Image 1 (cartoon, rainbow, N blue to C red):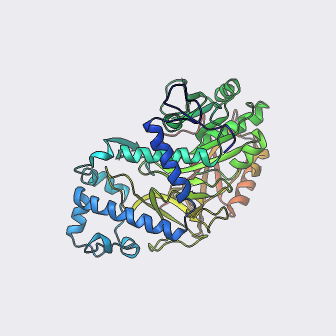
Image 2: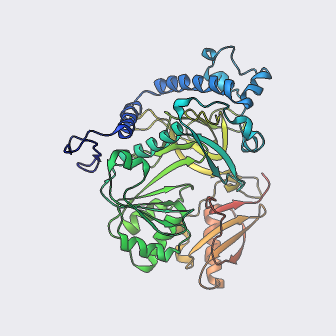
Image 3: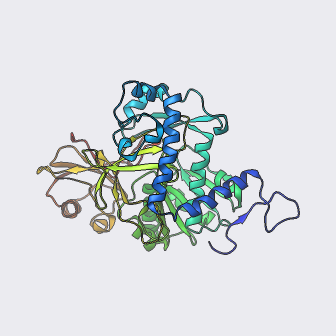
Amino acid sequence: MKAGSAVPVTSVGGIVWPALPHAAAQTMLAAQFQLDRSQWWAPELLRQRQLDQLRALFGFALAQAPYYRTLAGRHHPALPRNLQELTWESFAQWPLLRKADLHEHGAALLAAGLPPDHGGSSWQITSGSTGEPVRCAVSTVAQFFRSALHMRNLLWHEFDFSLTYANIRHGLKQAERAGGWGLAPNVAFETGPGISLPASTDIEAQLDWLIAEAPGYVHAPASNLRALLLQSRAAGRRPARIDALLSYAESVPADLRALAREVWDTRLIDTYSCTEAGILALQCPSHDHYHQQAETAIVEVLRADGSPCAPGETGRVVVTDLVNFAMPLIRYELGDYAQVGEACGCGRGLPVLTRVAGRERNMAVDPTGRRFWPSFPEETWFDAAPLRGLRMVQHTPLEIEICYVMERELDGAERARLTAAFRDNLAYPFEFRYTRVASIARAPGEKFEEFVSLCAP
């Protein structure tokens, strides 16, 4: 932590330092104290404490959530005779909970009686993998842990809390200005101002706003950050020194980290999260890969046959939220894919995800049957044509549509150069057709996807 960059709030008049925080700040700082130690535990100890909490969650879910009582009533073979017999082996046999189950059995997944000390609950809505809304209840305690992990991220990466924090996000109708960074940082630390801008704002206007406001941090979806960097490079204009860009909600494009360094001389910090279970993995302070947040969630990465992936393998993500008792989600399949990593050289025992690959519909397929996650980083095609945005849509194993944003139609030479570049990157001579569009549209709350496959799995 940079000296003087995190000043705790005080609740006692005349006592500026050392601070005597109020109750809410004490709780947040106490959580950080525990998280600061558990991150260094050996993986075996982390797994044991996860299992202890899993047994508590399982017992509550069987008693309070009709969905799980029904499963138990069917004498599911994975259910032990008592919770102390719940093991990792039996847990791995428990059936997966899918998004369709949330739609069909949402009411039955709700806890009949939330423990009083967990507070109330609120509804969270996400568009899900297919754009179909999913609704889930989140307790006050679970919301607190989500805030605590956000705070952990800021502390891990040594943020200077005195700087301005800019947030570009969906759901806003106009620019906003606040006295601090938001609920999690403000509860425990003195911060600089927080400013927000609707993500629907034109990219050029976003760049003007950042230049005028000169924030230290910019928090935005990955695709928005990428568009800002490209606009800044093309215009030859940039904000004053930005300490870090924070991306969320979308898979990080292959070229985004390099673009951040090249154009704004700054670092990119990504977070892997979902609406249903909160923050699942944070970027390591020393590397570009991610540490699973094992204190609040069990993240499984599974092969097609349901067995766990080994380091280097990519599989589907299944998550169990250990702290949200309002609507227990046990072995919930997100629809995402991720790659498992080796133990991290930083010394943290938290499991590693090398990358979050995306969703199944982000996988390409070629006529030979090869399925893969496509990569077409901007530096490989930037000189081919002055595109301001693009999305690939695969309609058949051979044909891919390139939807592009540009001030005019592509000419023949540009199409030829782009085709050659894309074929080289995708390692197959796909047939491309080009469609000029005014913008790359997406529904409110929908994650941006550079590549979408409409081919049947």
